[in-house]
Length: 215
Image (cartoon, rainbow, N blue to C red; front, side):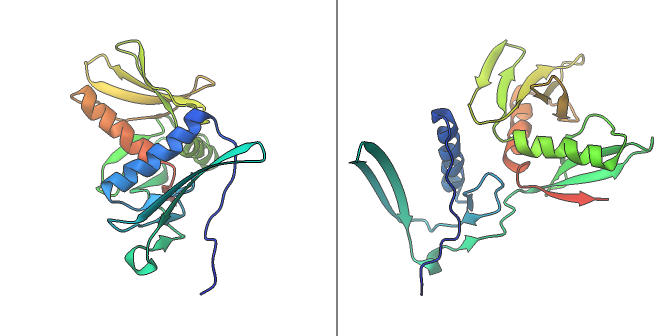
């Protein structure tokens, strides 16, 4: 069978951005899940429990290259070229006030994020959710109750997750764009900070590749 290049990409990223990419791969490998290779999570590979790993560090013509390669038999692990690896779906709907909103519903039925506000048109609501799809995965994380950054990765995201306590001492998160607008929130209070962080992580994991369902 002739060689087939299923996916190839090349772009300049910061050191932290590259680290973010490898951490995403490492998390999926560690959990034994399919591993997406693109930011949209539409191309993924499903490696076996064991694979050949080759690491090559080379210096040539004034340049240094690092190549990391995994090899396994095709029958031991396949490639999915239509791999919406997300376990959630964006739902766009009209509320009782005639405004358009979106919510991100996990496959288990739970709503893990929502728009937090109504939009005048469906198009505006879809633009809002697209901003979340673009910025959630690499969003910085700031714990406002301790005035500290929990996670700060130079990943290209233009938004920051803020963890805070509301007036009823429930734990919440919200995703704030660099322009100051809140583009997503958790929609509910959590009994503990850990639960809020778990909910936030589910959004970071699932938002990018989530399909859109227009009700």
